[in-house]
Length: 252
Image (cartoon, rainbow, N blue to C red):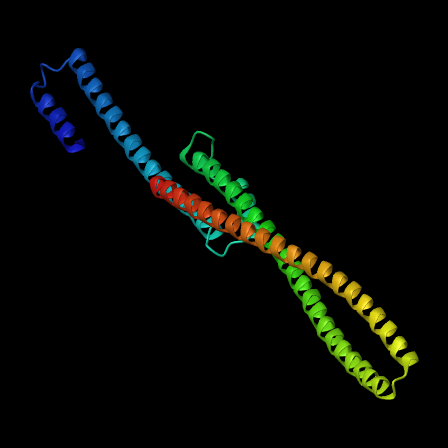
């Protein structure tokens, strides 16, 4: 373009002979030269703006890429609350040349922080459910241990009862053999006392066994309920991550 205007000025100059050249003609040529200089200056400014815009676009890509890396690394499958909070702080304090709320980077920061907050709430809820589940499992284990201890006591008591019955049966046989009414009466009284004691102990054991069975059934039901909540939260977390991945692809 510069070469073309130089040639135009030369052609205009040749249109005038030396004796025809006057002040008006000189002004025309001066105006042409000024226009040419202005055009050259405009062209240089346009080139500078183009270079500046290209540099700004490249810087925007770098900044946006850093934000995406921070967000992607923080929302991995094995992430934790500490990792998410650290990423949130890093995104909040992230600075760039185009960082206003209405800029693409500003809007992405806002969406990313909101997504991280939701993700943090989900993980916190899942951690609480896990802690509650562990507590119920410990309670369930304790109840099982108590139930097993009661079973052992029942077996020991049964063996002891059998041993006592055999002992008193032997005494009864001896008493029958000796036809001793005194020992017969004493043996009967002792058997009655033992039967009453056995009945009372059996009643207490049945009450304890029934209570332990109810507790075991209740804890098992609660454990199933918490497992269902855990599965629901996992499903919700997967859906949230899928939505965030879709939004991330749209920003890219």
